[in-house]
Length: 331
Image 1 (spheres, helix red, strand yellow):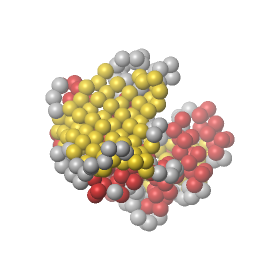
Image 2 (cartoon, rainbow, N blue to C red):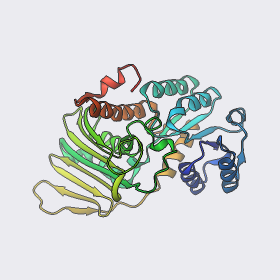
Image 3 (cartoon, rainbow, N blue to C red):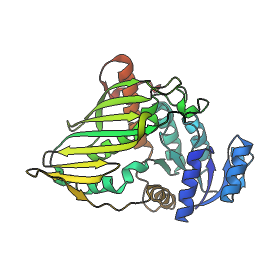
């Protein structure tokens, strides 16, 4: 599948490397407003450095757009791609507002092009194992999750990723949303959110620490912590069912503890290339072979969960996800 990459930055290189590992997607062109960035990317990946986005959209040989532009222009760039008949792989979050998310989703639906949103964390083999065996857990009662990275001394304050205008909600929208997606994937849709956030270590105007208490529609409760201010990179996801518990953490992998037992048992899960999987699924969906796992509607709901958290932190109350989804779209 011939694709073009737009919004050249560090993550565009990560996805381009995954496409090279796959061999099922070919990068035909790239575009960034920065001439230096697009020419450097073109040289690295052997593609054409387009002079404008319109040049890419008018190229009929290009079937899809790999969109890693800033959140605030996801709507504009994706709607333009849809109108040109291009399928779109869009990096998460789907947008900064529900209104933008719905508009770009509807544009892709009307144009009958695939919209795939990049949520690779749910594809990790340990989470797939839990999902495949979720029936053995009994009633889901609780979960706790943590996603933390060290960004001290690594923050470019000129980057939209670290500004409230470009990434409203800070660390929770940037990385916490991955585990909000995983929690909903494993336990069920999220009904309401209570949150707090703080700016403790990093410079700038955005929270670098945030915590959510989530109530799922099935009654289960979960907690989600996200941080850019911790001393190292760390990931944790513990899933508690009435009959069985799964413990996952970055250093010790997946372990399982059944009711009545006193010691958890390690579960062997082979490493998998989550980025290759989601890109190949996107390419297959564009060929009419199945559908991509996370489309516009599900990605919009994940966005609404995080935006509910932002509103909760600001107003000091629990916020139902439906309030965000049914609101004026500004959140």
